Amino acid sequence: MYFDTHTHLDDARFDKDRPSVIKKIADSGVTLLVNIGADMESSHAGVKLAAENDFIYASVGVHPHDTEFMTDDDVEILRVLATEPKVVAIGEIGLDYYYDNSPRDLQKKWFRRQIELAKELNLPYIVHDRDAHQDTMDIIHKTGYFRGVMHCYSGSIEMMRTLVDWGFYISFAGSVTFKNSKKAKEVASCVPIERLLIETDSPYLTPEPHRGQRNDSSMVQFVAQEIAALRGMSQEEVARITLENGKRFYNI
Ligand code: NI
Image 1 (cartoon, rainbow, N blue to C red):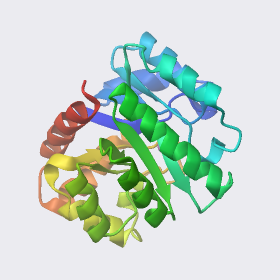
Image 2: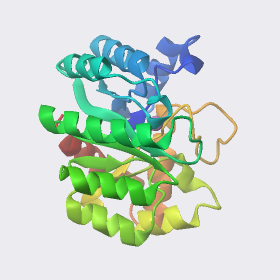
Image 3: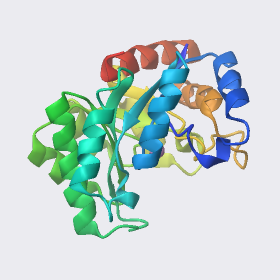
């Protein structure tokens, strides 16, 4: 009944035991997940995982960390990959000014270009924004294409309201369970429920009470549990609504 809308199951940390992790995820009540592309290699790997597993879908795209050497040819390869039947979105794409692994002008260029690709393909897109709120909002606004989700949301309530007005979805990961994530908890308690998504971003951001362990999609239940507590809802209700929202967003 859970939909983990953002995970990196192709990550090397799952290389030793991926089939048993997939079984564990299915046994935990996760009925859908989207493997998120972060570079060309993981985009290909996600398409393969989706072809091999009924409940797995994939997105394709290049993360801001890896835009330094991105080329027009890569965009054309992504365009072809996106025609695979279980590819449901472009992403993750965006800006990361915390790590600055790629020069900012190139991050911006390829963020814009990949939103345009999503628009050309009539697909939704997944945004990574770390310490780059203003430029992220400016670029999205300039494209005029708002079929997106802000993943692992870290902005203000005010920014959330602007995004929701544009038509965006807002997604929370395991970090919303951390005691010091006061701002994320505030936003999670007041996002319009029909725009709320949940995710693990695994193997990163392991939720409480399992911090320190490797994260996987079976832990999305702890994100649902936290949001249920914040909003005074049952965990089942959060699971059901975020599953419906995710299917609507990804058109599954
Ligand atoms: Ni991610």
